Length: 369
Image 1 (cartoon, one colour):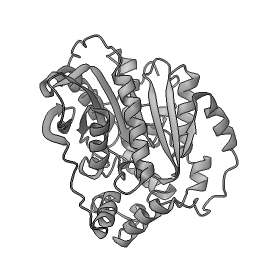
Image 2 (cartoon, helix red, strand yellow):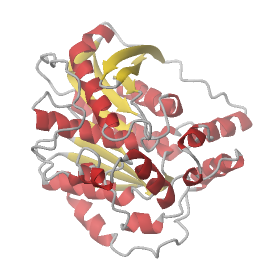
Image 3 (cartoon, helix red, strand yellow):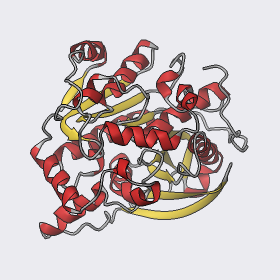
C-alpha cells in the first residue's frame, strides 16, 4: 500500500512519467488478489468487450469470485448481520429510482449521518447487490446510513441519465433524510468506479447550481477522464478484471456522442476549476488503468485548495475495495475510507434547509464549469 501525504502527490505523479510499453503484461497482483482473479476466471466469464450489454450483465462478478473462495474455505458469505436494509423508491427524471437504505443495526435514536453511494459497473453493468459488501462495510465501519442508488444504466439510458439520476437522489436525500432517521446536515457522497464518477459529479453540480454541498466525497478508483494515454493505462492495458479494451467498451455505450466526454459532468477532470468543492478521499488500485487519473485528480483538488486524502494500494486490482472477507488490503482501505468519512461527518453542520425538489434537466447545464 502506498500512502501519499498531501504535499507528496505531485512527486508521485512525476515519478510515474515512465510508462510501460503499450500492451505489456500488467504488474503482478498481490497473491491474495490473484486468488480472487483466478477464482473469477474459473467461473467462465468472457471479456466484457466481446459481449452485448445484456450479456455483460449476466457475467460472473468479483463478488461471485469472493463467494466461491469463502465457500471453498468453509466460510459463509451471508451479509453482515449488523446492518439492516430498507428498500425505497423515489421519483426521478426518467421515472422511478430504487434506493436501498443500509442502517447500522446498533444505531440509537439520534439522526445519523448519511453516505449517498453509487455503485460501479462502468455505467452499463453493476448494481447494489454486486457492491453490497462495500456498502455494508462502509455502514458498519463509519456508523453512517448508506443509501445506495440504482441509477439508470446505459446504453438504454445514455449520458446524462446517470448523473441526472444521481443528482435527483442527492436532492431527495437532503429533503427527506429525516424519514429514515438521517441527518440532512451531514450528507456525504461516494462510490466505486463509475459510482465514484457520479459522486464527483454530484459535488460539482451542487457547487455549480448553488445547492447545499455534500460534506465529503469518497472516490474509490473513479473514472474521471477519457484519456487512455496515461502511465496506468499503458502499464495495465491488459489488467484483470478491467483493462483498456473494457474501458473503451464502457465509454462507447455510455456516451451518445464523442463530444459528451468533453463535459465535466461526464468526465469530472474536464471541469475548469475544482475550487469550492467538498473535501475528498480518493482511493486507487495500482493494477488498474484508472490509477493515474485518480492521482491526477487528487493533485488538482489540492492545487485548487480542496482538502484531500489519497491512498494507492499496491498489488490491488480494480474492484478490490469490497473484498474485505478475503483481502487484508481491502479491510485496510475500508477502514481508511470510514475514518475519513467519520472525520468529515463529525463536523458541526447547521441544520440543512430541505432542498427544493425538482427534476434534473434533460441535459446538465454546462455553465460555471
